[in-house]
Length: 500
Image (cartoon, rainbow, N blue to C red; front, side, top):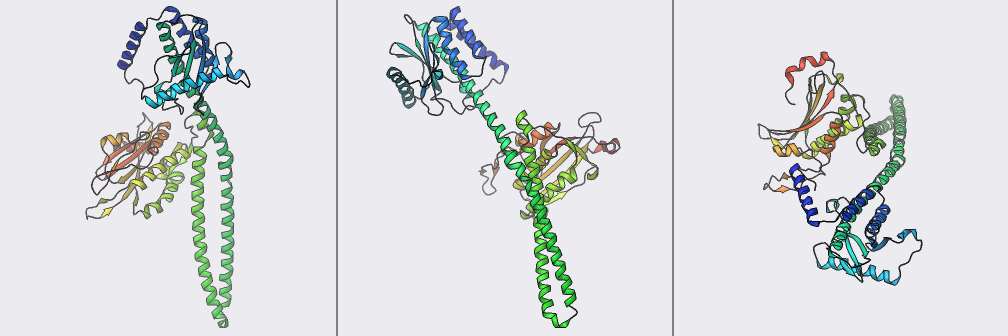
């Protein structure tokens, strides 16, 4: 965890300053540390770090060394570099001799025994047949970010071969030096992991574009063909009706006419249902396609943030109506009454300059939450009422002089959130713990805690703001977007800004 305050950082620096006074390293060792840090930062390559790690002891102190690192896949130690031959991978077909195998086996045995019998990480240098092995430990602050965290935080060993008598201060220096190797190794593993993730994500985006988004366009062709088939059905239905009219003048064919009428009615009912399904299918296709093309936009992944494609948008026809059409049947099914309230300006006159796909998903997320979390309240007659209310207000000069805002409100009945909950509900991963009505017991929060964070992110990228206001019978979730209203529309609104 990083420092929270300047005072904490100062205390840490002071402690480190005292540590170095206590270490009392001679100038040559200080220069060795500085050289290692400078050169280790020159490249993100692990091989570069391996070479620097064995080169510094050799050049400064004439100490030969071997660097062993755990393989993240096998969890086995591998000799990756020596101070006399360089990188092991530079010698194709290299096989370990019996002494090398014994050394690796001894180190692995020490490492795994430490893991088995001790809760603390491996500490201090280890005497090893005339050599000294120094554990290479990682940075615990990075543990949660790197999928591979070694064994008990140990990533490998620096095995040193001293040219003369070994002194305690030399062992202490190399112990600290091995720690610096570990921290740099951990950082470079994180960099490599992130680079691999980015490479995978970019490839995944290309695959999605090729295998999901492009094939998805064919569904519109299917829908068009379905509509043509339904038109043919209607023509057949009309032919049956015409035949009924002809036969109805002849009493001799009354039985046939009655049967044709029954067939016509069945035909008509089935066709009506098929046309309704076709309309629902087209709405679902339009909704899904918009979200797919918006969320998997290549620019999002290249830039590492949402990249807006703003365009003029009639929010009533292009967003609100479509979202309401989608959710109205779902609200009805759960007994939730949906109410819309007129705002300050006729909806037809409101045009927003926004990324239509992303703002549509903002509305969709809020409506999805309303569907999941709306709870009944008692009306004045004692009846249970579940209500979702949608309205909007124009906020004159909200973002500055002649920079108006439009505030969209979605009110849902239920338990009002606490002040703390209403402030934190838009945080990433935060989920409100709800209470059961029976015994007031806490219920496991549902959802991922991502939906409202997405809402906040998208609205703020548009230059807007979000919020939640607990009320007597429920909660109002709102977001405010910049609105370039004409002055004649905005001017009579001065006294109507009730919530901001």
